[in-house]
Image 1: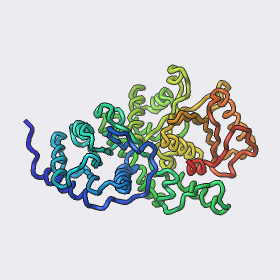
Image 2: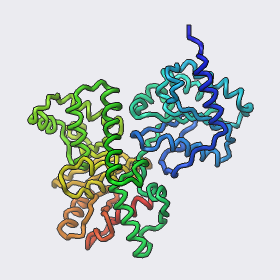
Image 3: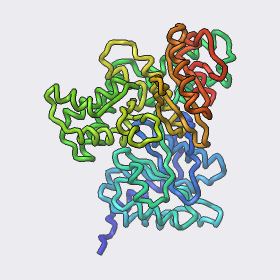
Image 4: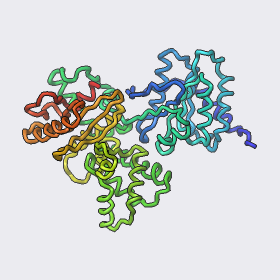
Amino acid sequence: MMEPLNTAMREALTENLAESLVAPIPASTPRRVHGATGLPGKATVVVGMRRSGKTTFLHQMRRERLAAGSARVRLPYLNFEDERLAGLPGAHLGFLLEEYGRQAPPVGPQQTVTWCFDEIQVVPGWERFVRRLLDQGSAEVILTGSSAALLSREIASALRGRAWEVPLFPFSFPEALRHRGQAVPGHPGHGTAAERSALEKAFLDWLSVGGFPEAQGLGPAARGQLLRDYVDVAMLRDVMERHGVTNLTGLRWLVRHLLGNAGTLFSVEKFHGALKSQGVAISRDTVHQLLAHLEDCFLVRTVWMESSSERQRMVNPRKAYPADPGLIPWFDRSGRSNLGHALETAVLIELERRRCAVTYVRTAEGYEVDFLARSPEGGEELIQVCADASDPAVSARELRALAGAGSAFPRAGRRLLTLTRDGAPPEVPAGITVQPAYQWMVEA
């Protein structure tokens, strides 16, 4: 027999619900998130790396519904990390519906209640309650949660196809501009020379700082400590605690390698061999598992080689990238400028933000194109990223690779993205678009 809801939890739920129905909705920098509209009958589940802004985005969705005409009382919000709710079983979440009925006026047939739940994964059995809300037909449900405990495959299993996943990334370049109070130009390629120069400077700053909201405006020392702390928490809580990983040494080596070598080819076999040569005891299977865990918690993104053969795809190395370009300077020990790596990382994250499926291409002649992006609408585009293609020898190499890949993928558009306007090639063949990456990001 289920234990009754204790008085402290009952009071905490009642108090939090009452406050959420009248308290001002927190303001934040507006985020532009592709696919955030959701689907009828499905819970919208916001996922992403820790500290990327999931909770503030949830409040943004509440503000949007308020602006669209929802009554304030129809936007309840509960954060289940309240220490008074520790140990709350999912079977008692139904108390929220009873209490909402007492605190709010009766809901008419056309008056949808948007339930917003933060960190709901800490409540065992939460999924049954959410399915019940969806089955009632008069509720919209928005969930956010730690990437350590609310992952894609678990959402699919827990909600049985009743979830619409919305990935959230750190600030894009336009979002970072808005956060700093700077205008986002509508046509960045047509401004004055001074305006273009200011935009390029802001873009270079963003590549260095990255997009994590809390990192904006911090000096290098504080920012470095903050971002290293993010990585440590992801390793300790999202990988070690969650999956019972005990090989901390191997995990740290892997994280340092992946975050410090953005955009390079990564082979589990070669990395395993390198660890063995350093006396680090770890199996190949463990390296595979650790890499999967790091992708699950969104700390690392990997890109497979494009191939119609599954075997060929599996035997070729992947390209690995950090979750944000701002992480690179704190893990790259080469001493070289890492603007090219940061630029390539930023382009990949922007493509994923646009919900594109991304691979890289290696042509029969041995040339490589950084990305083949397939949009949700079915379009294809080959994208080459080069910080500075103004040197004729460099531009010839980059454009030759695009041309070769274009022959293999005739439906795909071809685009070369550079760091600045001055990095454009001296001559561009017909059929290839060349532009600074910041212009491409702003115009989307």
